[in-house]
Length: 94
Image (cartoon, rainbow, N blue to C red; front, side, top):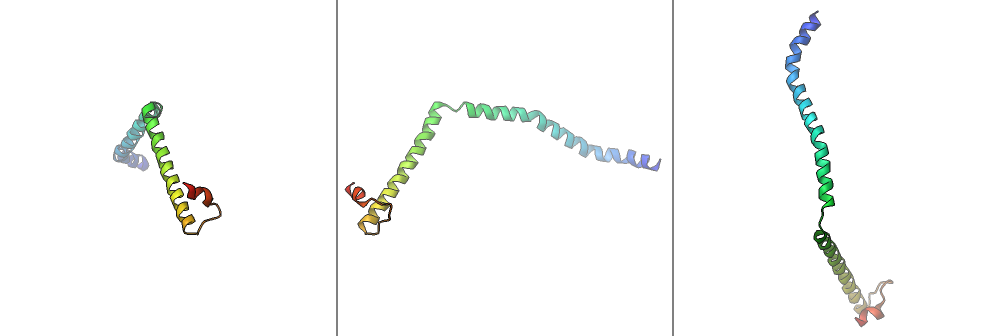
C-alpha cells in the first residue's frame, strides 16, 4: 500500500519528462519519412545543367593535375633527374 502512494506521488513528477520524450519521439517518427522523401527528390531533381557544371569542374581539375605532372616531368628531364616512368624523349618534344 505504501508503494502505491509513492507511485501516485511519483507519476506527476515523472510524467512531464516522459510526455516530453514521447512527444519528441513521435514528432521524429512522423517527420522522418518526409525528410527521407525530400532528400530523394533533391537528389533526383538535379538538373542537367548542374550535372554538366559538376562534370566540367571535375574535368578541369584533372586537366590541371595532368599539366602539373607534365611540368614536373619536364623539369626532371631537363635537370637529368628523370624517374624510370618518365619518357624524356617524348616529354621534351612538347
